Image 1: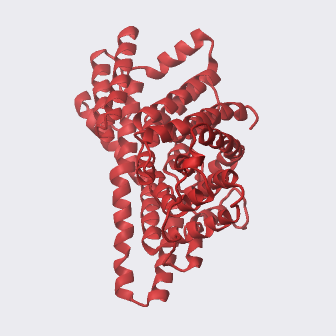
Image 2: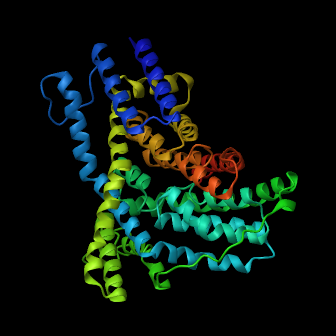
Image 3: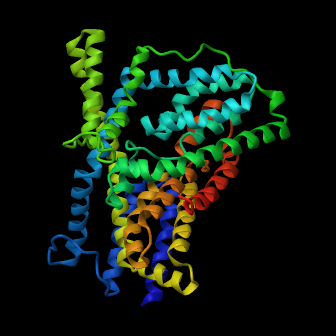
Length: 456
């Protein structure tokens, strides 16, 4: 029985990876594979994951479980992610995202004599922007319009310039990140606490390591491949913004509010707490108010609220549904005994919790590379972490953190990832060349993460 369930599990995981790599709809692939695995579990006489209320018929339970997951995820982490999507869409609409980028890139123009150092400095600047604009492809395109011309004018190759731009998206972090929302939800922790106490202490030294590695890797390959002699200066006007520069504070405002009114700091007595969804709504209304003061057209400003709702809808259709379907996929794995078999195999090999954590992290890194999506890989296997930690007695926060960061790092090494394709096409380079340029630094980053986790 165990052999059959393991065989079915491996075949299903392989089939899912193949379909996702070949650009099949990820929601459909994860949902139907999860349901199919639960059907196999029923045929093998295994139990389905527990539900709040059974229908009395196992076949109906499959769909009732889907309804429960949709209701749970849609009302909690899903609503949070949708408001983030609406806020990001509105900030882009009023030009606040452009204003923030414009303010952040000004110091780079002062580093004309040190082009590769300037390129490495893009990484922490871009990572900060990524926390405020949590869309890898969206931020990549924004940086291609703003920072990319600056970098190539400083004298580095196109592939080096695009590599550091995509490196800005390798850590999905901050309270506004969908992956952070999902990870903190799985370990039952407040998003700000997870960000401040776990993400930042690990990603700050990792960012410094990536800056150093990208500095030497880009300079080495530009020289070796003769790209420094073939640098083509990008013509055109400097990046400009239509919005006032003080709008640059708006995308940062949710992060500031969440930190000020977080129970982590305990700045107020009695305590005042603010959740991510509420903060996004406050900042969106603040943006609308500033637009009303600036443009003095009430009808247009009220009509612009549609941008916020449409942004929420797009995120529901893409991210929230992916979370729901990935949860069903993980339930399918659990029903076939994936966790029990993984735990038994690791114990027989003497791996222990840390060994399983490294195994799962590497698996997610490779899955993101194959799928071209950090969300798809992390949302698929992230829900398994609490169950694995419960059986092996390890630190579930540390495990899910390494898996979460590995998913976004793997995405930047995938030639089929949206951010890699979009930025490479704009620069006129091969997405495979860009993915190869990112591979060494991010493998170093992955190894560094395992080492740093023993310290933090």
